[in-house]
Image 1 (cartoon, helix red, strand yellow):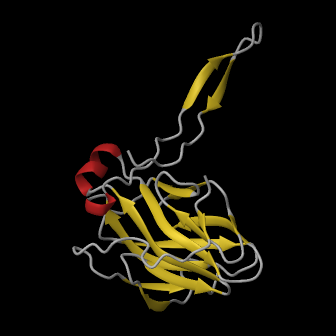
Image 2: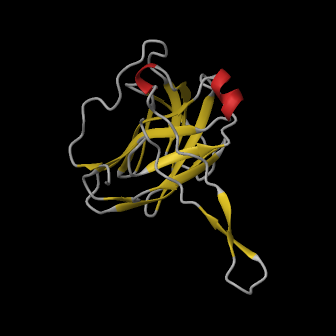
Amino acid sequence: MCAVSRRRPPHLVPLVAAFGVVVGLATGCGAGFDAQARKVPGPQNGVNASSGQVRVLNAMVIAPEAETAQATGSTGIVLMSVANDGNSDEEITSVQTNAGTAEYVGPRSVPAGAILTFGAGSAPSVTVRDLDLLPGEEITVKVSFTNTDPVNLRTLVLPATGDYSSVTPSAEPTVTATPSPSGSGGQTTSRNPIASPSTS
């Protein structure tokens, strides 16, 4: 189900006392991760930024703590909302990070006046594979659009504990060998689809 809301919620994510307010660097100008940034204080745990008619709200990445990451490998979940304050629809073309491969699942259209919310177990969702950062470290997230300049945000990786303990990533995609049609003398491979992150 597409997580689109036409009402702006007063609070997207509860405050976590251990981290307080994240003061991040964010910008909607420039196409690269190293584009000139400006400071934008986040009212919750994440970072806010805007570009034209689009606002990215409370962006953060949730990842396992160091001990879990060392045992299982680190995978992060991007939590954020994208609000379209304009009179025309917008579309997200990609979400990227500077510390892993971001896999986007779900709808990309952000209707005029609507909010598209990303999370675990929702559609859309963004999973960061091979995340090479740990909770407490800074990460850059770049959100690109069809008609609006990209939004670049520098925010924190937060631990999957407390209010975020249920934020868990989907399983890694796997490649399985299947028998080839009779007489072909070989094998074919199929890739299992990537499921949306769950909150089990």
